[in-house]
Image (cartoon, rainbow, N blue to C red; front, side, top):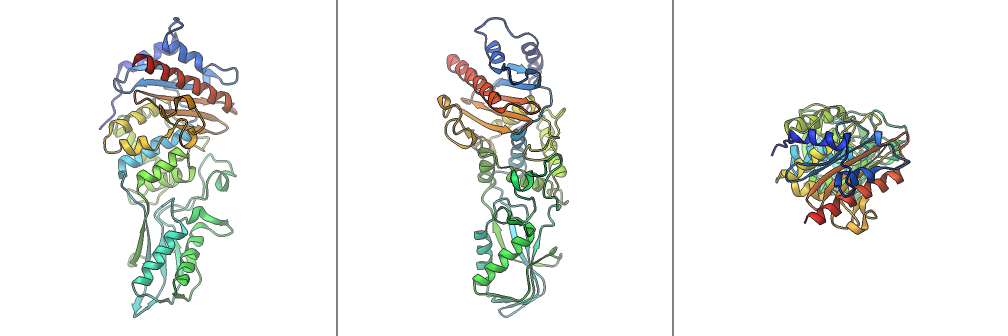
Amino acid sequence: MRFRIALCTVAMAATAVGSPPAASGDLASRLQKSLRSPYVSLAQTSALAVDMRTGTVLFGHNQNVPVHPASNEKLPVSWAALTRLGPGYRFTTSVLGTGQRMGSVWKGDLYLRGNGDPTLTTADIGRLAASLRASGIRSVTGRVRGDETVFDRRRGGDGWKKYFVGGETPPLSALVVDRAKGWPALSPPLLAARALRDALVAHGMAVTGRPGLGRAPTGAVVLATDRSASLSVIVRTMNRDSDNFTAEMLLKHLGTLDGQVGTSARGAKTVLAEMAAARIPIAGVRLVDGSGLSSLDRITAETLVAVIRAGLENPRIRNAFVGSLAVAGRSGTLRTRLPTLAGVVRGKTGTTNLACSLSGIVNDSVVFAVLQNGSPVAFWPARTAQDRFVTALARSVAQAG
């Protein structure tokens, strides 16, 4: 279902920003007041609240101004992935062979080819080894090679601080096992190749060669395949716990869908194309990475609200998308926030030194987004203002009901 923003909302929002109603009991006035803080600039705040069913703007402030999104960047990435791939999509990781099989001997090399699975573990590699043994293979005369060529070899993103790789996220690669435990001593694909070799030996198979790297040739034969959990499960962990690594891997994977090497830039192009097709406003939006870590990212409150509404209005992805949001007072990054609204608010948080954000849904009635920027941003006062904003919305919904 394509998302269409009502034409009247722009004019209504402009009124709310320019001259909030003077009546103290007016919702727009209360929401404007809730965002005021001596430590957070209103000029660097973008906020919007919209009636979920009608699209009527309840409040708007700088809602068309592009700002740093922090981890709210993950919302358009997860929405686009669910839309394009479907909630049931699964990543595949394969073992391919070159050479030939002679009885129980594989005479040649094995290639462990990654496809960007952010959840790949040693246990998964063990199952691949078990599958090879079950097929009758008992020894390999060549080497086990890690193939990460589905993605580029960049371990981080543009606009990242140096410590982000290894600090905020494991290094990026199309082939990462156990979130690259053992890096930087060895590269992610080499760690993965070593993990497969060790698993083969543990399952009673002899491997002559040392682990290495390489691209599986076109004629290589698929010998075993691992499939990840469904995308709906992966996205739930990504958004609820705000996992940067999963977001970056997912973005690069989206960049492979046209048959090219997966890069953050190609993934971002795919996300923007999906948004444009759904008539989600993309003016001023700049997606540089998938996690929101980049200082170059920009998004608007209007865009985030539109993304959430698009997820709600699409029955194919609604359960997976809404289910990926943290629940106030109960789960994820909202577990300790808004305890008086436990179960009433679902949302996505975000915090960097440049931005503090919160977007989501109040009581399945109101969609909202609040993004506050600073250099640096005072994130505790910002979160306090966000909680006041959401509480005022929730009270309004309760009174209306």
